[in-house]
Image 1: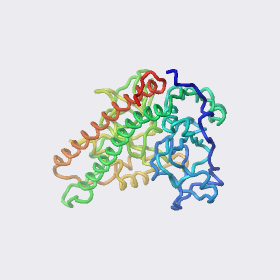
Image 2: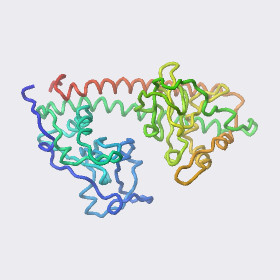
Image 3: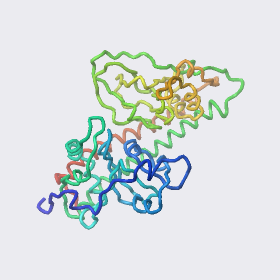
Image 4: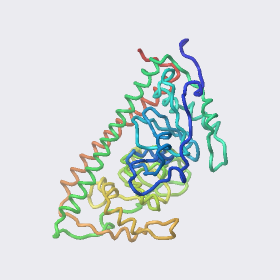
Length: 391
């Protein structure tokens, strides 16, 4: 450890700056301009590049604020303060002033090694200590961030440490991408059976005939149970992340095999939905009344509800069921139950296919959870020199 030294971020970076003004210099626009703008919500919600908004920006600002390979992005304000992102490739994108971009001096510090320092509990504690502003809008000053101390091993060892952690993250990312493909297959299977190849001789039913909405669950007040916030649900999520245990007061209750669909605007329009898999056997979880809980009945495989929730035609219908003031619209559940669906005489083959997909999705999820646990265990030990990597 004698060759390791403590230093501040200031000593190992070549630049650290905020981005473009989000209103005047890099506004989000509807049309495809070929240039995107990274925002805090894109980082905090782990949105893919394809889902970032387009912007218009002057050429000189594009060159100055363009995101390039090995840039490190950190949120500097709001409830997501401190969340971060590593840029793997040069992108046709700038970033706005809610974010800080750091570029490491690669002669002194490997960019990926520095990034992993921003994933540690030490970093999270440090961010809490320097976050100022009002209670509702914390913010972080660049100079304060640059005072964050890290341990710096020789450059070769930095790269080796980053390589170990990157290999785990790459495997996790691969499994997530496989699950996205499997989710798309489930939605395509639903569309094939209930829409594209539906027979006119099949019985026409209503969604309320085949799906139980907000089924009753028993969860005594004051009991500690897994809680899932709407902010932790994405547009497609077989297994939602970042749930936590919380004392139950009131809200929607769910169990494994249930699908959660956002009920309010703009979450519904943003496609927020998830399939619950993270609970222990027999365990009940809960969330706010912003969710609609859906569970298949009449012998239909439970994954059918998730395939339905990510189906565009159903989403369009659900948005048409929104009622109330423009600022706080909610889905009228009675109207949603009227969604028309043709019912096959037998669903045995459909159920078998859904079961196969669910098993693959769940096995991938278990691998992801195991790899994440390994990474999170290794991270502080590697960054602190407790576990060494041969070079």
